[in-house]
Image (cartoon, rainbow, N blue to C red; front, side, top):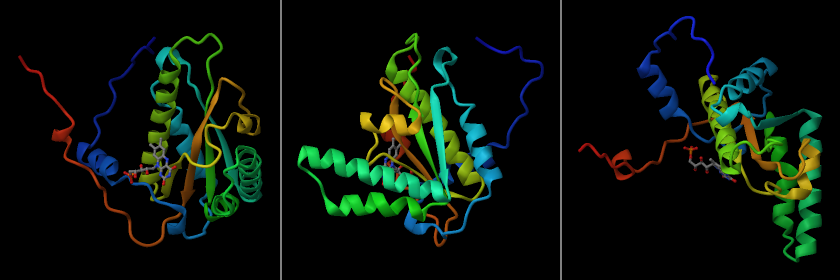
Length: 205
Ligand SMILES: Cc1cc2nc3c(=O)[nH]c(=O)nc-3n(C[C@H](O)[C@H](O)[C@H](O)COP(=O)(O)O)c2cc1C
């Protein structure tokens, strides 16, 4: 399914694109300044998420944006749910509870990342998760271009079925984690990567 192309897309400055992609890093809440990101910037990030590729155009990404008092709401919800679930499983840890209660308050915004399973199950579930991951990469790159710190966290209540309704989801949808955002302070982290040649095979004849 393609749109009619009325004009050829403009060429982009590949050096600038390379720089953006290779500069993108995960920047964590302790490196956020505590200032609040203007909402217009969050809207650009969300708009760009919506341009991710998606098999059969299912567009499975769903987001809930938390800011201000919403961050406290999220902090309470996730720490209380963790307590309830981990106590029932007999593996409750006070430190994890405290982290879940306090970490959201270090961010300017947190975007909960959901995958909405298409009712007709047009494509395999893994492809819906992949499409959401593409949307998150768009958010990462846009945040970098805007000079913002961001990271995808998948700890805590991520993947818990009991968490779904709080984020407007229901089984078989999935909660895939949280996209933390803040204004970075201090140094931008350095990338750690093994050379691409260790991960690629070329077949040329
Ligand atoms: C699906 C996914 C889940 C992640 N979950 C976590 C997490 O729970 N905690 C964390 O510290 N980082 C998490 N990260 C961020 C990675 O740790 C980070 O991308 C990796 O260290 C590479 O660093 P970079 O993003 O700066 O290149 C996650 C990344 C992805 C793609």
